[in-house]
Length: 452
Ligand code: FUL
Image 1: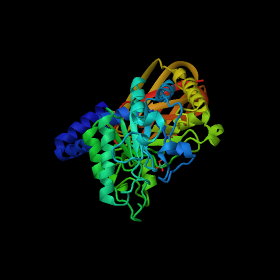
Image 2 (image 1 turned 120 degrees about the vertical axis):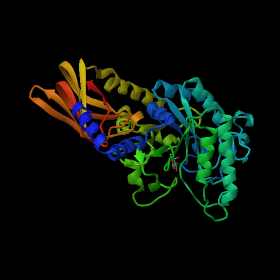
Image 3 (image 1 turned 90 degrees about the vertical axis):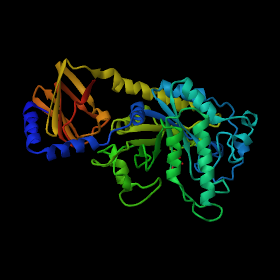
Image 4 (image 1 turned 180 degrees about the vertical axis):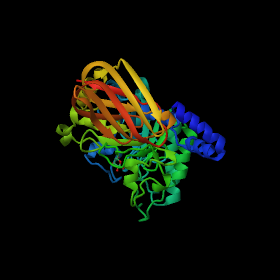
């Protein structure tokens, strides 16, 4: 707020206590991230691991009739998963502890359909244990996916009975393996052997996570902590608000008019902080299929995913499925390393520091100007709001001072945690970011320019 506005607002305070109270209340009630939501966002990159009986049957969705004896990875090494993820700059990793086929990757007491019935590690194996141990050894934050849809369990469809089974499975995962960073729920829902559609008890499920793992974020279409971005292309919306009206997506798997739109974009005046996670696979399928070995995304495609997820105020959850050996495939690992290198050459290594920078804000607008004191050719900028204080910016323009004067380089809507804009190379000595509109007086933005 500049001096004049300060004086004006002081006068307003004298004249009308009501106005000031109202403005202050609006600012106070604006949603902000919790500590765990902030940590989740700052990870930026997470690996998703789809692994289970489908890996051995070459299917995407098992029907629950698979025999546990087919689960026999010959050389499973969770440290190789974690080492690859860490080397590529990922900070978290999420494993499918159970997919829709119902096969549990840990020795659960709720069913015999688990690793305890498979020859792997002489029936004493526990993939979840090896996974969390490997994450911790490599400094990655572990998360687990537990599919509510279960095509094996006989109780599925007998709603109250299955809900007890599901709660017991979740409790095992939440209590046996130490701190988890994220618990991932998809909303897939079907009929049980009795021909009845299962009704899930989501309040109970979310309540269990909150009670047993208060430092984990809960992901689902309906949050409550992190929402799905609305597609499986790893593409966050533009605009992308981290706030949403929770009534629009009442439960995971809900479908109806406007839901995908709301998941993609959030709502500028949404009442809860629920940022979007962008999930996508490095291959066409979620599970490993040998026929897709030559369809692994290359580094340029992965960089594109990064720009359209992390660079649009989201987090990238990139699926890299272990093979039948229980290892990440060499081609996938190579692509991850090339992605890391490309990120460094396109962004991290090319960041140019301005000699000085100014910032002014007034009303719902603001201007940041970075002065490089020499001409540099820039091809991208990364903008960030201090989201600990909430998300405010709804429209902005980036311009550069060229020999021919100021020229617009990019225009955008929301910024939030990060907004990455790429453009044709421009030789500029200054970069200016004008916030053209915001929900309230913007706080200082961080602006990084990348040279080529
Ligand atoms: C969906 C599932 O049906 C897919 O198999 C996959 O796990 C994806 C991430 O979520 O709901």
